[in-house]
Image (cartoon, rainbow over all chains, first blue to last red):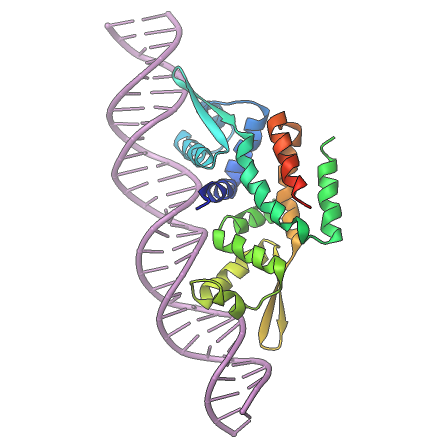
Length: 106
Length: 106
DNA sequence: TTAATGGGATACCTAATGGTATCATGTCAA
DNA sequence: TTGACATGATACCATTAGGTATCCCATTAA
């Protein structure tokens, strides 16, 4: 049923894709630009972008002959939502840890 | 390098494993008990538990001939930590969403 | 002591995954 | 209009992943 959650978790399971997500958080990038940052072919990068798109984590907008890959932050919501299930189970130690992480928000 | 992050993300990429994590949040369980809850063999469940253990999400304690599988909430820290990277990039819409999710904490 | 129970280990199968190479197509610039 | 450039699509390959079946060992209960 909830395939968005599954697709998002799956998309984030690969280290290359997590790197892409972090890069796109800084700025939109074309496939060619992203490919320059990795040691793999453009085709491989494009496959990762497709998986990220399926996971709702990015959007791919055509602009002329280029494709602008843009982070879709809302795509992370299903994942964060899944984690929220544990709020009532977390012990004090992790509660403090979580608080510390969120404190970094600055 | 940071294999804990990778192993944790990978462990959570499978829906069965996410279900196991949620079940173990409620109570510790043996392999046999968990197997009753899924439509797969004990060997398959054990494989999932191994992956979860590699990801630092559970601990497996031997007690007599049984193995007590216990949630290790701190194992989620690397994942939450990874997400915290985006705090400074999130726009208002997602910031509100995140806030709403955390509001569910009760 | 013996049988049943809980689990480990291994081999095996199929499908999915991450990657490449290659060729085709649309678009921009000279 | 004619290349060069950015990307799409496809076929192919090796490895990993999720699953089963099977056999073995340790522990517990009768």
